[in-house]
Image (cartoon, one colour):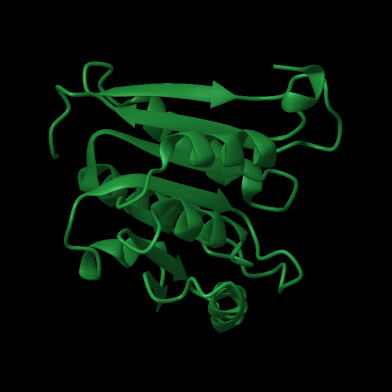
Length: 195
């Protein structure tokens, strides 16, 4: 690993995806945004896998649809215009991988943000859907109003998880300015089972 490997949370998150997500898996993007992670996930799971993608903004869903269609990856991606707190209404199977990018839609309305109340509901449901040895990633953007409050709520929730059931790691740059995002990675252990 070289010095340029640990540049930001986006790079770390993408490394996680490329190293963990495999062909044929079922994965969940709880905040599709501009579709960048959804696109990577669709490539990783291949035509035999499945990607569920959620967003509350039609603009985000449309941007993601376009991006997937350009690369002919839209056949095994299910995009849902709804809040991530409702994932259990659509996803009825266990998933191998879950990702969240909390905050607002880049190049979108900065007044529309993820909220701690719905995020915590979603996280609990996502952990229930996660398979044994599955991984869940949460990137918390904290530079906007409400971002730090949401990050603190997420962190408190994750700290309360039973260490016999989950491994939780916090990735945080401590020498960077401008409030860099914080990444949490969660692995569901073999003894965790379904909640």
